[in-house]
Length: 445
Image 1 (cartoon, one colour):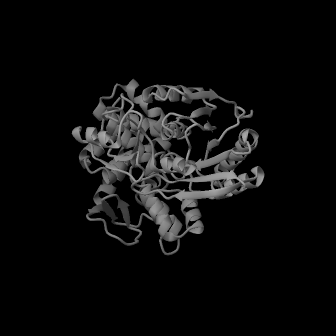
Image 2 (cartoon, helix red, strand yellow; image 1 turned 180 degrees about the vertical axis):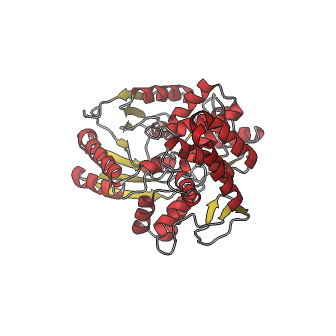
Image 3 (cartoon, one colour; image 1 turned 60 degrees about the vertical axis):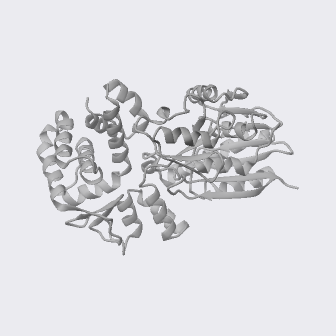
């Protein structure tokens, strides 16, 4: 199975998370590292740019495309033609047709004709042209000029135009326009149109930021120091993070700047007892351990055994032996304290990390948001409130931008716990960090 066919077949599995299935599927397909990287780019790009691609299909197709296999094939071909600079048009066309031919033979002529019509009808403009128009679509370092209208009218349907142009659900762009402003909404959709920034948290118990920077430079990897003293921003290599120097020695871990800033907000101290209620994959637990120089007791809990197993492997890699893990049932109270700090990195809608999880944007709805809030409330009642002591601080974090999961949830927690909100921060996504939220609640004086 070649890279295009694998990406196409996985993109059909919209009822699951195709990107989570990718690793095993690519190994089973026997793809080379180069083909694996290409297939990953195709799959992630098609999922991320789905609405934009569908807008182009609707503009060039005569009638609706109802066959999901054909629509997925059109998305695959169009993504290569429109958004991948290094793929020649003839290779995109021929490769796509060959990849889907066994299942799409009766419609292969239609597929070929539509892809060629788009190829003839689009021009690439560099540098990208600013302005709002129905025939122009942003495409990273360039813009695409079509020979017909493909986007919603920005004058009468701004949320729809933003959704078409940067491939987001219109319900989400509409929410953001109502909750904030046009500038903030535009910055968000633009941030989620770029690859997620790769951040590293240096493990100060085994390395220094300077030594990690030097090792990365020797390996030819571009890296820059972040605002937090342990943070680095890195250009991800083709071989993945495990190929970076210092990985096997436990010199660093992957962690976003927003997560590190959230832990800094909690200010864990040596000698404290810390409970992490939603710990896996363990980034915040390990960050607490490092912030305290290893002189801290951390109990990391999660409901998923497989995720805890991966956390155990990460603990061994970093050498953080005194971080304990425990599987807990979502229906039962967490282990009793007393605890100085309880971390609640609660399940949420993921609207702050849509560049990392491309499928999440298409799963967002008013219903899924209500379900996420209900899950947070259940965790608060059954696991968090029973373990609070008279001196317990609470760090509430999400990777969401939605007030129902953030500010409103923290206000409910304060009302039911007797705690007061000491600080709260919304992290806007940009080129240096993912989006999210963190709030520190402390006992009332």
